[in-house]
Image (cartoon, rainbow, N blue to C red; front, side, top):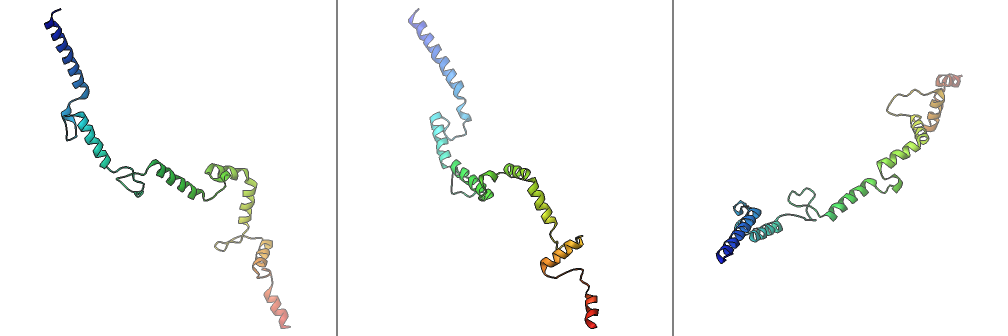
Length: 159
């Protein structure tokens, strides 16, 4: 093989590599950066822009549209919200599922409470109370026997 043939083969190989590299890196004029002549310069420009952009700011308000909190600040805010919702409830009753299970397991207690509430005198609504219930309610609030015959007492007192 002659020297000329070897140089032509080398030129062909280098040209093939250059075409492959150019194809791989893409058309530099399509970059949206100011510098379109160097990938390194374009990446440095992008890095600088990102550093100047709003990003993580733990002092930003919760309604900020230009910054976000760090993961640890977000986790802290969620934990605080859960703690406020739970408000010191015991661990066994600090989820809705645990509350539902506890109520299901205590149906007799729930029924007793419901019955007790139903037996309370309602000040806002008309109730149908038995004579015994009326007497007990009147005694409890200190007005005496609801069946007391005041007319008979008056007539008796006149004589």
